[in-house]
Amino acid sequence: ERCQQMFADLNRHAVKPSPSLSILYDHRSAAGNVAKHLSLSANVFRNLIETERSSLSQRSRKLFTLSALNFAVMEMCTEKDLEDFQSASAKCMEFWEAVGERIPEWVHVRNGKMTAGEVRQDFIHSHAIVLQALGRVGKCIYRDGSPDLTKALAGLAAIDWSRKNSACWEGRAMIGGRMSKNSQNVTLTCNQIKTALGRPLSPEEQNVENAFLAAR
Image 1 (tube, rainbow, N blue to C red):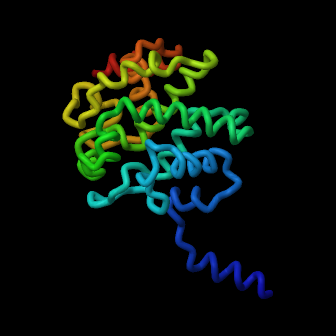
Image 2: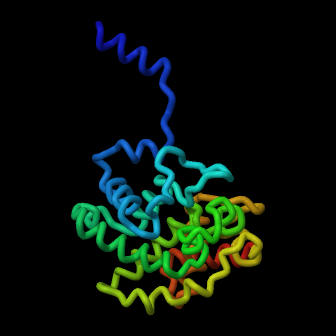
Image 3: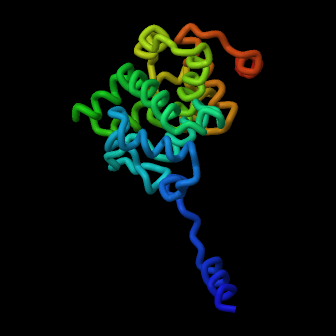
């Protein structure tokens, strides 16, 4: 009877926690554990991950959310990869540190030359959809074994990530000027990044790309 009453009381007043907070407290999630490790250990993410909320206010000093990083890890690593925490963490660390060196605004935030709010307002690359797309690109890069990341990611520095670059990002990462997180937009954003890096699209990605171009 006591257990039933506790169940009733907890569910009557239940407030669903944010995805980031759920990941923070969930120690069974393999991807979540890798994401938390990256948030504390990777230079690109250290002190810039919001662990309690899944949306960031304009005044927040954080650049990314833990839930966004978790989705990026899930895109990059297979379930089999995630069974080996050390190996998955090392691979993700290597990849994201290399990515971070090639996105100038992320470097500027770490060095105090720009605020996180300015970057989030003016650029798309700290938002969940782009992190997911980059994670998917990472999976493709590592599919061939141990890649030369300097060569594989060379084209990242030339990408114009500005929100004002609507000719590139509208319909891909943005809908009506607002960030969109549905699966098709992740694919279209991934396609744009892969094209910039000179990597071929998979048949499925090409089908999505063809449909997008036909509708423009």
